[in-house]
Length: 428
Image (cartoon, rainbow, N blue to C red; front, side, top):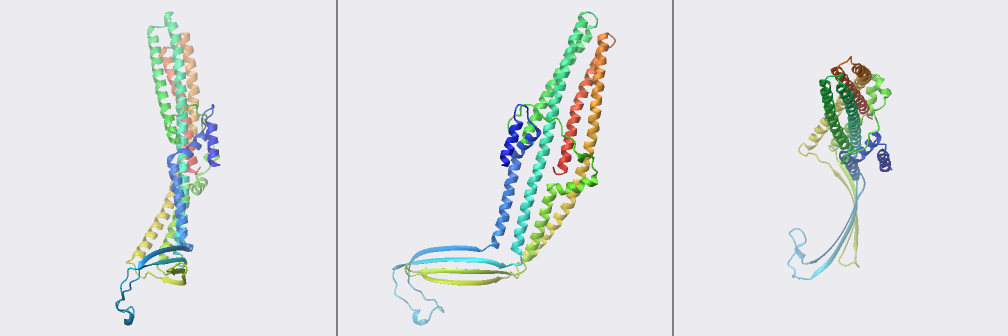
């Protein structure tokens, strides 16, 4: 069902209206090789947890054997009475012998050492799942950043194209003025230079846009080039942007998959320590066996036996002490990492909030600057047409308008990227 839903989203984003951000992230979550590897590691960790539970269940085994051998007897000193331990006539006759056995063994008690090892493996599997989720968040952030970078480059191409069209219009206007003798030839040379520079800027913008799309494809895990328009222009504002840091930081720590991963690591370390301490004490096992032996299948001789065993490793050269010390150190390190992460999450949220707030103001300023530059260009064009302005004034106004348009595209991308980082800092 999940794969079908992702495929539907990708198909929806691949239609004529272009690629949406939602479709791009869905494609990335399905295609990125690092995520496929992480999910495989998650499945392996889950399998290890199941394997760690196996010793707690009864262990049943079955054995069957057949042999054919001679029956010459050799007495060993102290093994049989002297009356039958003498030399026997040798024979090369051989005989069949059948053996079958079935046994069941169960762990009775080992001071929860095996159980704690299972719980440690289970916690490690949960930590691996959280690590996979953290990689998904990172992947979504990378796709969002690459998507809006490509979207900004597309807008810069449009700005460069508009600038080229405008400079060509200026060139046609100036050419008419020069032909009529109303303007000097240097104005025509300046206009031609402006057109040439606008063409170069358009070529550079198109190259940057192609590179940005290639980076977006890499972030999505798509090997081929991306074609078609990018639909979404910016990430929308969220209430999180204006909330206080003291309210956001605890929610971010609770939501971040890295925090869940470290919590699982702490629990795994605690269980591993308990398992290591349990090996100081004896282990009790119970076994029930049945076997059957026969020289012919018509004459089977069965036997049944039961056994209760206690095993206590009294001294292993300091092995258990070293294992306990290692587990204690791992637990201390895991708890310290939790504190480090809490501090880092707080910093991530604060930095992202500040970036969003600064970018919002920058976007407003960029739009005001573009409006002012547009008005300046309009006035410069009017002054030049009326003979009151110079070509340098017109050229400067055109350059300022082009820069203002590029600044709007860049600041819009910066704001979307900052919002994406804030979402990632909050665990989204």
